[in-house]
Amino acid sequence: MYDMKSLKAEEFINDEEIKATLEYAEQNKHNRELIEQILEKARPRKTGRGVECAGLSHREASVLLACDIPEMTEKMYDLAREIKEAFYGNRIVMFAPLYLSNYCVNQCVYCPYHMQNKEIPRKKLTQEEIRQEVIALQDMGHKRLAIESGEDPVNNPIEYILECINTIYSIKHKNGAIRRVNVNIAATTVENYKKLHDAGIGTYILFQETYHKESYERLHPAGPKHNYAYHTEAMDRAMEGGIDDVGLGVLFGLDMYKYEFAGLLMHAEHLEAVHGVGPHTISVPRVKRASDIDPTVFDNGIDDDTFAKIIACIRIAVPYTGMIISTRENESCREKVLELGVSQISGGSRTSVGGYAGYTPEERPHDTEQFDVSDQRSLDEVVKWLMDMGHIPSFCTACYREGRTGDRFMALCKVGQIQNCCHPNALMTLQEYLTDHASPETKKVGEALIAKEILNVPDEKRRQRAMDYLDEIKNGGKRDFRF
Image (cartoon, rainbow, N blue to C red; front, top):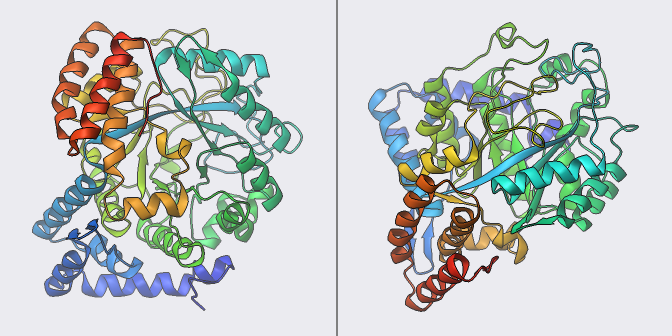
């Protein structure tokens, strides 16, 4: 029985409800009147407090995804762009993954870290190696990391993860510092989530991979991850442990994408209904080639056009969430979906354990990669590319550090007021990057962009303060201003 407020996985992600949803969507995919009504419901509206969006239910959003009328799809794309602009403007948050260990006791059939893979060397970073990795990332210009680790209670216990977080935050190199550490590790206990919260993590990220229980158990034949309910209920335990920013995601291509889409939105609805705050981020990875993993064996792959439509429909349905796309996707794909809803991307990423320190931007170790990196450009190249398209690459972590997380962040975001802080913060962190790390060409493009965009800060006093801060960053050597 479907119950979005239940704490049982098979009730808030209910198979019968998803199947009924998909049937309803198929029956109504050419119902123009209904589709127009759904789009109108989702449209941003100005209020006395700012801008508000109603979002969509999983059923309503599934109708949009199923619709194959070209002109309606274009209307969806236009609405997704409008919503993205209303809440995130032209800012794109930058981050990088940091792989700590590829030891794993699971047997996930789509991941090269599975315990039966004898092709890859196993590696776990020491604290000194982590220090070198972080210095390399700081020298690139990164301020925000997502740490990744296989599940292995012997090699990667929670104590190791906590020590790594402490090490990362402790390193101050030249003008560099990692200001936010997001954590992508296996489902764990409330007690361990409390420890992660106390360690000062940003977002706790856990991909569901697939919401289809039978497929989930087949794709995870052995190991702790085999337990569908324990994995699916992890976000509730994380929030019980005090972590109020959580990130959802599925691995598109493993199972039926329409089923996954509905399940993903049901999970977001569940978090909102039970905890009063939906997912801080939603990620949309696709299955990619890796050591002993051939993505063609999964017969549910989705093409780029379908992928773009999924992203647009998520943005319409969950208007306030951050949306993440990684270097799994190539440059042209990333360019297309940036305007349709994506608000965070990685740059200069390495998906191998120890992939940063000791390597030039052109060198890329492959022996411990979790997946092939399709976008292999350096961070500087990605930053310039974004600016050439009119986006503002943002290294901002201010909301996390000012306590604007969870329901406090969403309360501001849901009326568009977060932009009063985000726009100048993005420009100031971009100026830090330009001053400390950018190539001459990137610096030239960036400073012209900042000079133009600072004029878009509506409050005159805040705009002047931001201009003063920008001057102190550029000419006074100061860092870390934030609103």
